[in-house]
Amino acid sequence: MRLSELDRFTSENVDLAGKRLLIFIVAYNAEATIEKVLRRIPQSLQTNDTEVLIIDDSSSDETFARGVGYQQRNSEFKITVLRTPENQGYGGNQKLGYRYAIDNGFDIVALLHGDGKYAPEKLPALLKPVIANETDAVLGSRFIDRRAPLRAGMPFGKWIGNRAFTAFENAVLGTELSDFHCGYRIYSTSALADVPFEKNTNDFHFDTEIVIQFLLKKKRILEAPIPMFYGGGISYSDAVKCAWNIFKTTLRARLCQLSLFYDRRYDVQAVEEVYELKLDYASSHTAAIAAAKPGSRILDIGCGQGRVGDEFARLGCHVTGLDRHIPSDGARRKNMDFVRWDLDRAEFPINVSQFDQIFLLDIIEHLRDPSQLMDELRFATGCKRPEIILTTANIGFFATRLMLALGQLNYGKKGILDVTHTRLFTFRSIRELLTQSGYKILELKGIPAPFPLALGRTFLARFLLALNVALIRLSKGLFAYQIFIRAEARPTVNNLLKETISSSGTKAEALIEAA
Image 1 (cartoon, helix red, strand yellow):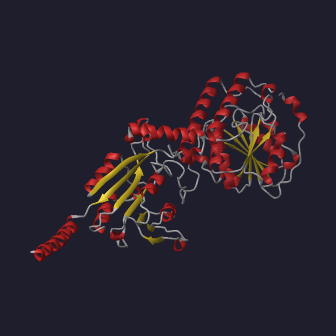
Image 2 (cartoon, one colour; image 1 turned 90 degrees about the vertical axis):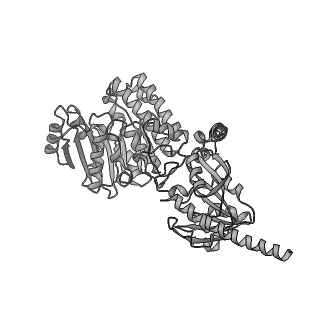
Image 3 (tube, rainbow, N blue to C red; image 1 turned 45 degrees about the vertical axis):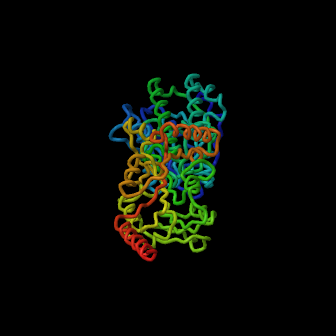
């Protein structure tokens, strides 16, 4: 679309409703266009509540001088013109503008480009949903009318590339956006302050990363159609580099969602306090519940909110849960008691020998000294020989090994490399810890990855789960996501000596009486 066709777009009036607006123009070598962009800002936005910020990213031409000159000749609204001491790149320039908006108390930021490819005349229409608090971001879209960019002069090859990458991003991230890569955007400043945009790239795929951050943070995003005035775009080599970066960024973000990778840029969600029960597919929860003996007395160490304990109680078991934080409704749970206890303390606050089964589900990896807990637990059971059911993550899982081979070992908020994990185990190391602590291993098996939890209850999740179960049969050390162990607590030497003395005395008395 040619600039002469601008008269097709009628500028709307807009009421900022007392909100402060920053129109932020990123500029690089834009001496021929920057003043035209400023003149095209709608008059309805030229108020005391609006400021225009131009950041010239160390241009090699007179962009900065042209901006300052326009600033001196016009007083319709405040204009601030800055120049970076050295080139920051497209993403780096945006970081500066958004930080300026946050630090100076603006409510809304509108991003424009100094080359004029995005029409300032559309600002009122794009601003209205943010002003009305109907969304946290408005993304201009060139592809709501998919053929419009071609009519505007976009080369067919770049049009195809954009369509292919947008389809890829939508498929991987589960979105339905028509245009991930348009640089015409309106943001709520409070929403910007809620995502770590300063950790993003300084390159062109900054736009992709910030959209992903908004999606992960569950911010509201709207798309609105915009006209496009194609001015040539970036070079072929830059386009290939940008495409590769977008591909890597999208996959990395998805891996972070699946807890198979960690990147601080996408660490935007709160830590889950309550974990979802995994009951309708093979998991550590279903294995633990299957191991519970109906009617038994169960000690659930590290019980959390007691959700697995509820399932034990439904089997007629009487459950006692130990944890640092106990549920507020614990006193009202049927067949369940809760005791607040720091799991890293040396002594148990209750009589452990009264229990038939003791469960430690995904807890041993969080302790400072797991061997100390297992020693103390064995001592506290006396001579009762209760069954121990333990689950923990398998650090030997093939995905973790692959990341290590690629030079990555990144901790995250959940999964095998949960940041709260202090000890990590393979099948061999957890077996050795238990046998050296005096436990007899009764069962040792692998648990598949929770694909339905990560991907939803989909055909793909069911297929991957079945495949994972089959691969575990080949090598549980390589393909098990978690380790499941049933063991028996053997008496300590002291307890066994006491038992031996007691039982010997009883037998001796019986022999004497028989004689």
